[in-house]
Image (cartoon, rainbow over all chains, first blue to last red; front, side, top):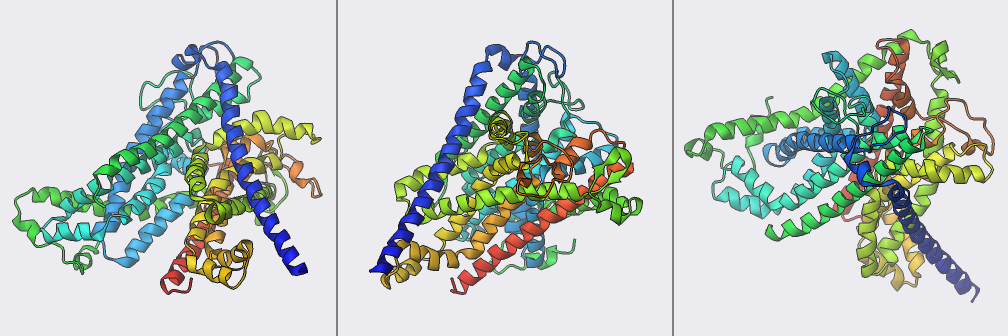
Length: 284
Length: 318
């Protein structure tokens, strides 16, 4: 009798704890989203989204965060394109071009290693490279660094996506005499939804990365004009302008945080929609 | 690279010999083939390059600053004091605090999702957790600064920017990683295990505690490790909310409620202003090397555990 009582207590406690956890996690999620919206909505205006800051660097004054929005857009898209062009061949190599298990393991180990490296270390590494070739903080350097950050994310997700392609499909293509180049077409077409999703998710991660672009892309109040000049970015706009004592500049930080979160969450939702939409054309 | 000859002998019988006989752009085939092979190898080269450059810029420190000084308790580069201990302790404190918060919360959430929640709840909750994973860390840092820090200060701490504030922000950053990986591990435990436990009279929680958690334990440890790996590498968000003071925290019950500075934040704060080639510069890269090694160790350990679990499952032991 007594044992059954304690069993019951244990069962109820465990269930209570689990419910508590899930409710806490969700509550904080709701708080994060709603607080960012609440703070940002107060300062969001047409001017904020369509103009670069008109005051000094840290100073107040009018203007908005267009410099950071455009900068982030160029950085992220550039980085994504570059990273995709490296990551896709890497996973095709893993899936089609080598039967050498040791080499394959080594490449995967390299990917895992890159995956874990903190953004700031990528930033420091790119900083050395920039000094070595006499480059200064610029859009191009930022793009290259962001590509490095996104590379392992893309490659690992691509790898998982290609793993899902049924081997029969490839074998059928092989039996028809397809060359490896044609096998790539089969592979890519079949896994396209997954690949696009992976790219969108990698883009979301890249857009939010602050530490890697700190020394490499720099920061500026003007709109991006050339690959060789520094650009602003949304995460750094939040970082730099939050710590100023001027309310007008802080307002820009609030707006930048809201825009950044909206874009990243939007992209993440888009990724799911795209996956569902493109998924109709794959063979299951 | 001499891998090509060995690679082409595949068990599936590829159409290698046909390549030359088809008239569809063999040069294209040739080009793509080699570009792809180069990309594969480049992966290893990139890691090697990163490590080489970090070593080249960071290792000179060991010759310039005696080891005893590096192990000192003061980081004050203007007076040539390069003690790394306060920074390492800062990183450890913030990370440990976040682990203490995120691991219980994350594991119980994962257990709920995998074992208790009905399908319709899973369908809602899992995408929500993935959305959570997408929130940029700088936004979490932003909220830590505008909302959490004032709250903590109002609770009686001398300042709101403390190691604990950083821990809270990092905990929430590590949560999605911990939840989704451990949920996968729990989900992979065969249903027969639960049925067996329930059949011999275990309650649901007993089945979870005595059977499911044990079977999934390598995956759970991996989830925690990867969560730690994410936490320790975070830079800007932590820099915003930990107070950024490179002091030794006073050991005591309130150790978490003091401003600290992490290794990552130190690089971010000082790299832009330091003169290239100076001792200070080299020391910052030494910190980079330490971070590289720490995250590498955590990740490869986690990878080994995942591998171990997969192999055991294949052998039918799990």
